[in-house]
Length: 587
Image (tube, rainbow, N blue to C red; front, side, top):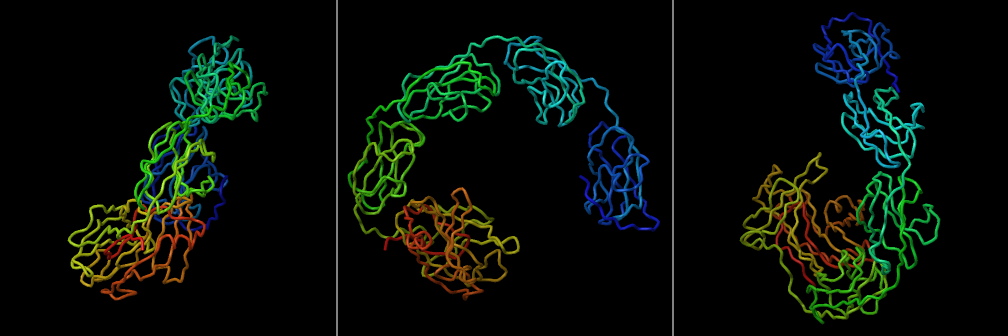
């Protein structure tokens, strides 16, 4: 649809020497028109349009145009037009004052397109191999199969290829029922026939067969089927139905219907206890090609679960060994306080088994308490095996991840930014300080730096560090010596409700913002808090000022999610800062 162009008519005589040329004198219908402009005035309202030859300079006669404030000297591509004689015209600054024009033609190409089928006679519902030659190369060119003598309208198209890539070559189209047909090739999103060829389809039976890997499956077990003698149509499909039920979609319990149901072996989703039929259907229909019966039964497995030790210290890794599992992706193992009901919410920690029948699963450590490891099938909550163990409390010293005494840790990871973590000396009450360089971009609205330090899935919950200023240190992104811009610190954690990022920033203090949750979708949830200390040096605090940052991570978590529980701390996060003595402690 044309947009109304409000033109300010200029009744002056043009003194410009603008020129317009087209890349060739003749184009094909719908082929893009390439024009080149030179010696343009350079006004924001200068524009160019395609008109029928001899048509008046009125907007209703414009067939294709460029009018976007950027029509200057250069080459531009305009949309193609139908066959006929035309002029490309360039106009002055939002007017119909003509600066230059150039004639060209659009002519129908000589039709040399060819189309053939690989056979003159096909078996019913088998794919049709069609070869086309000398194609024009338009993105809208297409092929369709029609009943012979039926007009070329969409209602008569039985099978087609129309995907923007119909060029010279050979294509497989879905098969059709018995009858006499034509394969027809058309021009660029139209019913303009370029070529056609006739072929016949005969009604023959199929030798399709379907078998299941066994006559009886255990409840929760995937259903393994094997297909042979498939026709090869993109719409062929297979479904599982209760024995004796009608062939309607609402009775389909599990299926494979993805354009690739050919000879081969496939796993279909598990189904409840009962008697079933797996049925194979022809090309988007309810025509049955083959079927096979099977049952799903309750077959108790000798499921086992055991931990590698009967007792652990708090924070010590726990290895759970399982056996006799179903082998489903959604089988799982959970760690529960003794006596807790088997729900995801009550699990202190849990992991999917990832379809193994037997093997080891490692948990990163627990606080002191009495626990049970429990094994479950396929998203269920009926524990198939349990094993008790205890975790005893040992007062462990704080874990120091960075003291920057003589150098900085080699475990720092630069995630974003142009500057690696640096070591500065002297530091605060030590022989060194960690320097992380913030980089503020987009008019100081976004910090482009980010650094991580692994914290080894620690269950220690007190995050501490010294934050300070180095009066003689020049941050490369700031003009003044000793200044440290805004930055944030935080931790990536695993909680009972999933993964979280917890972040503290004194910017929230400056704007009187309270703690809040930001959910960015797909499980990317950030818990944001005002900082207990000032981060910025030089603007909000003196450049030599140091402060001790200390937060109880679990207590902070419960401020925003009172019903959640911290499981462990995965890694530390920062976007900058003069930092020292980064550690986790229990008390």
